[in-house]
Image 1 (tube, rainbow, N blue to C red):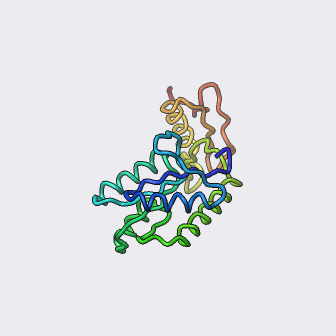
Image 2: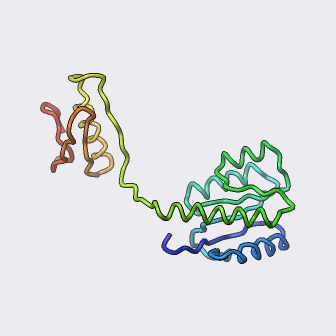
Image 3: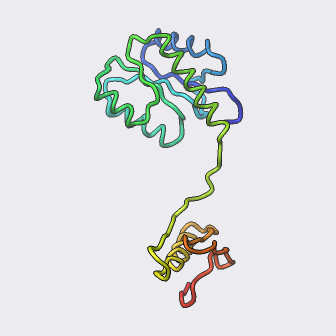
Length: 186
């Protein structure tokens, strides 16, 4: 996130609920409403469950998986414990049962701002995946396995890995992607 503004999209059925939520969101500094036709990623989607919960939860899961939105606040007329559990398992961050209480929404927005502030200070770039190969004792082939695994992954991903084994110093990648043990063919 380049700026501190949290972009919010509201997808609910009732126009009265929409206008009430928009007013609540606009009353908190640092939030900006997104229009329905904007194609930018949302930081927050406020979504109301319809009549087909299964379909709605599949949609929510796909939005989160695709990175279309970072967080979801869910609204429902039903506050059944099984529904709450399903929402939690799907990745919903906040759940509001109707009628919505203004204080609950404002508190949830404040928690969202806190989470974003904590993440902003600890942003990191994921450069790769760490796979550990550990032998139970010396001489069991840990280095051979680690090296061949790295070479195989490099061929698959067309990348230059850094190879290491738990009982030795890192093996420095060569032009052959990773140093191979003697006797192994390419």
